[in-house]
Length: 192
Image 1 (cartoon, one colour):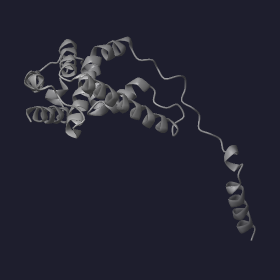
Image 2: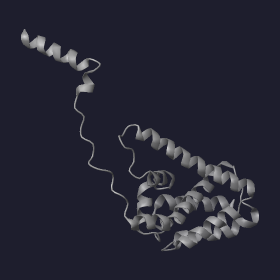
Image 3: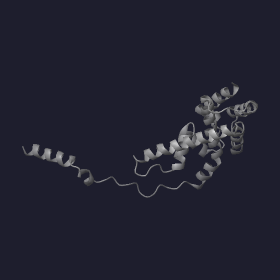
Image 4: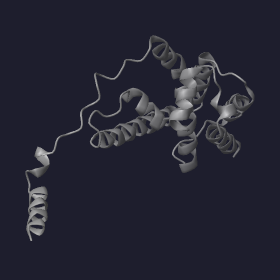
């Protein structure tokens, strides 16, 4: 009889509104998250041009697929030739990536350039919104917010971003299947 009473009392106490406040919380992780090494920061800067190219090529393919932008007819063949070389290059330098981003932007009229910029900004905004929702479930959120945002906006995600940070000259269009497919789809769209 006493055991049944004790169990019932435990259940009532456990379910009472203030019971959870008295439960000891697990200790928080010791100290702040360690800072990125200087080489990682330098690599992020060096990889930024390729990250921008990945985002731009993906966005252009999406926009062309929806009919939201048009590539100027005289720019289709040169842009297609430049992008076709991506899948055959063993290395992709930041300078080459910047040149290709400029080629994509110059192939669009001013309305197309604005649509591309809006599309990229909306993707980043969605990534930040998703991360803000995810941070509600964790005590401190992602340790490196800028990297987390980039990982959500780059085709191939964190593995591609990590590979670029480790080697800024790595060519994702040669080694990563998703990015290879995106550039192939874009080449097909440019031929139409």
